[in-house]
Length: 270
Length: 353
Image 1 (spheres, chains in turn orange, red):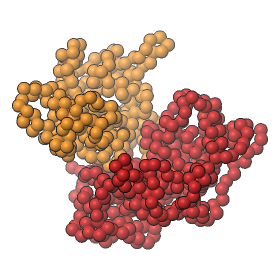
Image 2: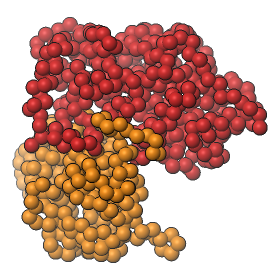
Image 3: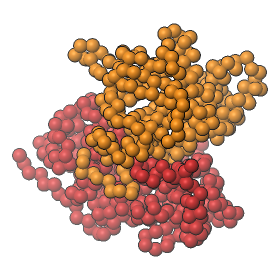
């Protein structure tokens, strides 16, 4: 495992509580973490383990009940809209459902132009912008000529998911959070999407955080795996250790739930 | 409690389902024909299960729909035969098919079937509807007993029967739908992506249930459609790979996964992700491009556009499915040995950095 120099995002005692009194739910329970530059991290857990809540806190979409998140060594400040915009320049996300990630009323061009503006290229001449957009589209093997002037609903699911990656290519964020990016596409497109994400990581050196329940995916892509159970990280480390030699019973169960091809898949445990 | 026996269908013949050169098409609004299932032949023996793999848009789900012999627009029957337990069901009156074949002989679980449960009715009411729609006149008590017996056999709590769909979790809903689909004891069950919207734990329960159906002889044969190859490998005896409406590879599950012949099948197997040692050492191979538009399918090999080993004569005449014995067949002009030597070379180049 390569040595990572700088910690880009870290947290101590990060907690999220929903509701009050009897409705009180502890979704994320005092977690500590440190993500490094250009590291690939997977957060694995079953439904309801709090992984999406954790992701939303990292993105600053919901507030943190307790604890602190540090971005590039400094305390993260997203108290005003302007500061939050600034944070989002560096922290971007790809979600599970490409169909609901786009505004139906905005054309594909508007989506990509928004990214250019966010990078401070709003005053560039039109030709330059088109050039940037074409470059981004060709990165994910889409043709800009075919995309321009189209609405998102005219594209297929795979095309939309690739367009999301083209956005990331334009924005070049420091952190990309992918929340189940491949659970709605077939196995073949999954390989394509993972391929683009890895290429992008290698090109711009961003930190990639996968949120997933598929432990096979986590094993394949990540440098570090965090296993989440009821709002806590119960196990973490390099995948060859955590997934091939798990210590926790919970991790072993997650692994046994996934079909295997070399070993026998034991169905008697459910 | 009246005793409604769990009658088990004895297979009348060894081959439960036989399909000969089935072709079906969609007719679009512009009156164009799209042949989504193109001369597909298959045989399923009693006690065996068949898996169908392929990307989205390759005709897997259309094949499942076509196998029932009940067509509604825009899907139309073109040619071929479907024989279930010795009875040819092509050309039968659609109403007869619906009442006597569907559910009795062949049952179908469509994709996201669990979302089709009526939210205003209890599960038991839904079961009553199913039984009445097939002209079985049973009393409510008999229906309840029959359902309860079936549910208990399959390890589902009988309380589910008295619940509304919103009270059940996704995994439970899916398992309920599967249980209800076999309430008339069909010979063949077609399950189309029964587990793809579920998390891994519920998925495992669904898979176990499908295997139990076979073990308890509630169904004689299973056709399982999914793009998740590790699942197919663990559930089915044979695997068939579809591409652009045609069968491109047919083999036992083991051969299809570890020794595929058709370049498309090889590509699909290259996208398998499992948490086992060795996976991290090889790079995932994605097949570039998308399946062709079936409005005007390319002449010659339909995979030629995306194939790494394409040569000029691939695009000539259409390629026939080549039967090489031992239940294996593939649709490629290259010889077995040639393909294998390509794959060997590939494997040595494909080590992950």
